[in-house]
Amino acid sequence: MNQEIIKVEQNDQGEQRVSARELYKELEVKKRFSVWFEMNSKQLIEFEDYRGVLSGTQQNQYGGVKQIQDYSLTVDAAKEIALMSGTEKGKQIRKYFIQVEKEYRKMETLRLQQSPIAELIRKVDVLLDNQTINSEQENVLKSLRRERAAFILRTPERYKNNSQLLLKPMSHDLFIAFGITKLSQLKTKDFQMARGFLAYWEPNDIIAAKIGYQSAKIASKGIALYNSVG
Image 1 (cartoon, rainbow, N blue to C red):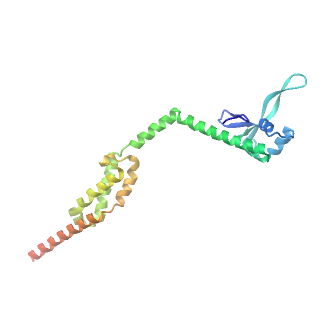
Image 2: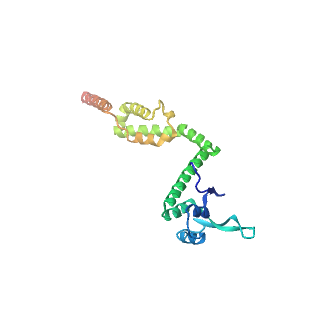
Image 3: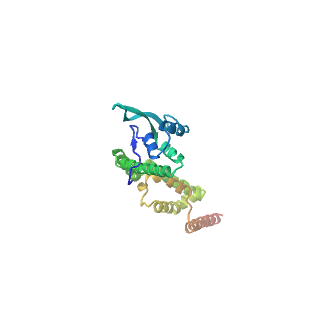
């Protein structure tokens, strides 16, 4: 930001606050401050949008000093008052507050990114991202693979004779889909997706044809054996 129009301060709670008197001065209001603030604070909520404070010092006619009434505004409340002024100056001040908020958020994001906690979170994220499935999860996937093969082949006899025609291609397709060469390399974050992959896997036409051929071959042998016995 090139120029500070109104000072925006940060309180102990990390909130950005604006002096109502400084806003009043920059808006070049002709009314008395107390009258102006009473009019503009009607739509605001005390202790949420603003709170009364004593600020600055002002010399009196005897050379002494005294505190004057001021109000600490949230940036949102200050933007609203600036907009309600209906002046070009008010529009400029509102845009200024918006820019201040952007700069503040950018600085806060940078601060959080550089904090020790953020670094720890990044390390944990990397660790979790690289974590692979455990033996229990690996067994779950192997079991799902067998169950899917049994479902496709329908009968125990067909499973006994044709299961390898499905289990190997199923594993191959799973490895290709998740960029691995063996099941133990599967990332933990991909475990649920792998379960879904196996649950809905279907053999391609070539594998289906092989299974059909094998089934027909076994069936023909059975018929031949039956006829020879008969």
